[in-house]
Length: 313
Image (cartoon, rainbow, N blue to C red; front, side, top):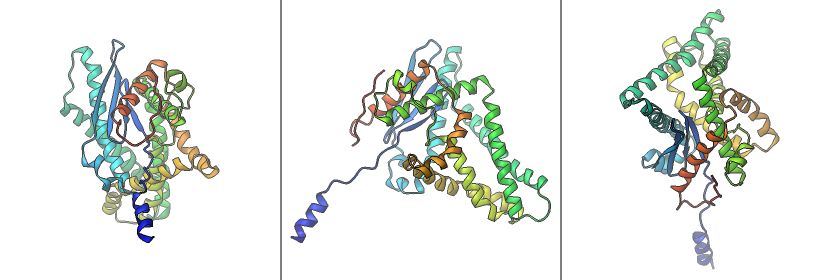
């Protein structure tokens, strides 16, 4: 009897964890990422849609180790850098080819490196300098609070300012198309332009929301370390980035699962509100690109154990 019970327990199929599709906006296009396949769609200047789609072969995507809690947050950060850079480079070349220009990988790497330096300057160095200017006396809790507030203000000002540039504003429209398409897909409705158009452009699993959670977790982690000597203070802000990203990732996943509850709705207010700075309502042509990217990403998952939902153009 015990052996039979053990056999039944062994034979019971393992419950598959739901995979959350996601992506990001690129230049005149959208990247979508599936469990084992990614795709990016972009619209050429002649109006046609062009695609790139590939399986995810790196250990970063295939190893079970990187799917463990907290480690998957670090993997998500590395993935954003890896896939995001590839997709943006590809989409930039799609637009440049109409002008007979080819952007080299080296040029794009230099551009990304400069962007990283600017980001570190804005969100690490500038808040520390601001705290030093506005907080007088010994460094301690007060210094950390001023630094955290300064970082939040700088983030909001930065997001508001870049949205004034027409190319960035258009990128934010594709960001809205990506969110609306994912929302439609997760609702179980047929993913058509008409159905996607009715969806919200806000979504709890968003890079902008992730940055907001990172800022909050960073505030909690950094404040107790504010009395460190200056070299260690700066080093702590850099070295702890992966740990903060890991904690933030788990927080986002939890919020996604409880988003229909009262605590979930309350906690999501600042996350969704900030997305109003980085998303815009897309037009139908942009929605078509996002749908094409999701359809291509899903087409590479034919043998993935999940219930397929209908897609329509």
